[in-house]
Length: 485
Image (tube, rainbow, N blue to C red; front, side, top):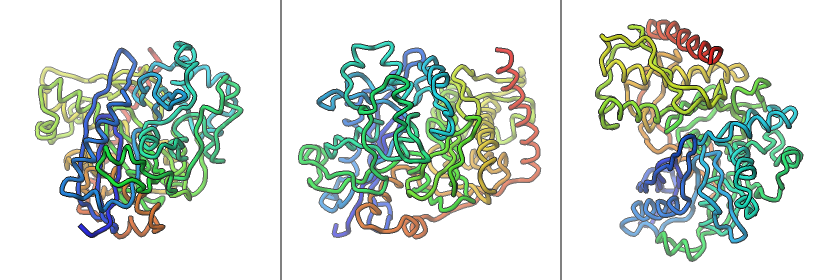
């Protein structure tokens, strides 16, 4: 193949995806390598060696047929917030503590107590699963391990280090650590010192669109690529998904769903929430900030429900009632591992409410989807306080390939949902960043030229009104639980 090709690597919670695109951003190939999460109580960990095995598997799949000779650049994205702790040899000293881990509630309380003006300094609250409280947990409960740590990394930056032998971090992922001044684009040294943490543990900052380094001979051989290929710094998976799906301005809302789920909207000014209900972060383009309202149980909730109801995940959406479950009084609270926006409470629990003997499995499945969307809408109700009015939603990939789920989103939010069928928007966004970083093309030219909306789910006004009434019950039940726990 004579065309120049670019790789996008997306280190997700359950798999690595490798997307190959040409220099116009058109899809060429896909590869995937899977792994699992090791859970023990409130712990959620992964072995970084398994990530690298899956990276090799995904790249080798994608490059079948001799495509590797045409690759001119690599972009990287992945799950945010997690802690990879490295020793002198840049080898992990323990399994990675990932975003879904909830063990560090006491460390969150310590940070909140000891750090003044926390929300305005770092752009929002520190949540369990963030790098900083996980590092504090290791310091307090595994001091022999902590003593060996010389650098800390987020997951995608660890993978990029294996590619280039250079460790750094971009501003988007730095914003998700709990130790970064988003408004000033620098580590909060005084915060770290107040917690007894050496700021030298934290890597230097490189911009998302910069070339971070070059593919080294060892990993090049393992991947089937040529050494010396530029590797662009990249960004977190939420920001990469916004790039990949074509979010171009503050009047568009990204609804993103993987294991968790997010609502994402661009901002023209830095606007942290004084109440710490959502996150304000830098965007990959280096020009905008954005709000990020995150819920912990998106795809996780329907995977759980599919297993409990005896359905294969791929069949789940075929077994969903087409009638709103909340109209029959059935509600689902999707707080299976706690919640972030707006409650920032790892102790919240899930529940079915209003369950009657007349309800069927199809109605329970429908209630799960509605509960996930109600939680996303709850996050949006607080992020929209600082953002400009939204005219449309963009969504694509993952569970949102289901027309039923997309219509629920459109009806709950009362906004048209523009759909792209691309199932791998984060990996695609990483590939786009690879093109931009290597060629110098403008981000808007990639997004405008290559993103095509293939369908629109228009909201039903009657359904929207009905869902708003259901949402108020959903919110009231949640707040009642919070008051009476």
